[in-house]
Each structure stands twice: as C-alpha cells, then as structure tokens.
Image (cartoon, rainbow, N blue to C red; front, side, top):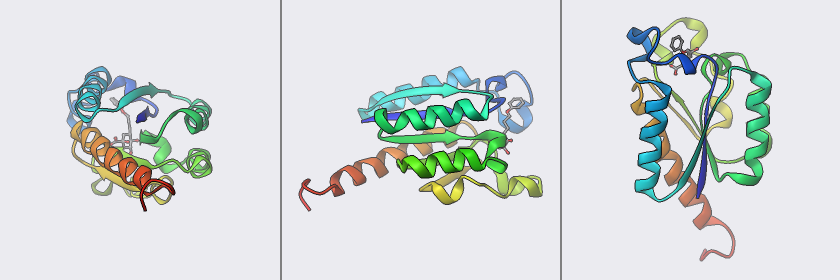
Length: 154
Ligand code: CA2
C-alpha cells in the first residue's frame, strides 16, 4: 500500500512561527513521525508540501496512478479551494483531512471546509498527532476498501 501525504500553504513554517497555535513540531519532524508509523503499519509513504494551489491539484491528479489513499492538510485552501475539492472528487481515492488546530474552535471562516464533503473524515485539533491519527484512519480505510474489491473474497 502506498499513501500520499499532502501539506498545504505555509505549513513549511511549522515550528518556526506561531508555536502557540500550531505547536513546536516542524514539518520535517511530522514527516519523520509519519514515516516511522508507516513502517510500523507496513505501508510506504510519500510526503509533499506546496504553497501553490495548482501544484497541489497536479499532485492529487498524479496520485490517481500511484497512491492508494491521500492524507491531506490543505491549510488555508481548506476554506477556499473548489479546485482542490474537485481534484479529490475526480480521482476518488480514499482521503482523510487533517488539521493541527481545532478549526471549529477558531474564527468563523475556518469552520467551513470545502474538502470535508469529499473526504472520508476529518481529524482536527490534536496538533502533530492529528497527522498520526489520520494516517491510522486512512490505513484502516484503504485496507477495508481493498478487501471489499470484487474478486477479493466477498
Ligand atoms: O490547523 C491547521 O492545520 C490548519 O490547516 C492550518 C492552516 C489554517 O489556515 C487552517 O485554518 C488550519 C494554516 C497553516 C499555516 O501554518 C503556519 C505555520 C507556522 C507559522 C505560520 C503559519
């Protein structure tokens, strides 16, 4: 199983600015913990960060042929991007949305996610652990999907 982790804009600044909201973990340390967990679960993982909407759309489209599921923190694009939502909807791979902060406890504009309706679920508010919980959720989802495929025993 090959899973893709996508990080949206400004998440490259993690651990450098605003530790009060987003914690002290850097993007590198989050990716490293995700790789450790993937090894434990027995799957492979690719991680990618971009500050650009179209680049994230390209990465999602490319995942159609190479990944079994997507873990995504769309960051600010969560609240604005029909393009990312449409890309996820088009490829229809199992997707889990994660956020470091609890987006429902913050400003009103963060409560709406364009991504949530095309994701299997959303994990929000557990800091860097949101990613690890999200990876476990995605892994379980993909295992279930693969075992439900016709010709696989059902
Ligand atoms: O809580 C999350 O994970 C967010 O996706 C983070 C986004 C925010 O727009 C979403 O509403 C919730 C912002 C990511 C910006 O990351 C920074 C990290 C360090 C310093 C400044 C920004």
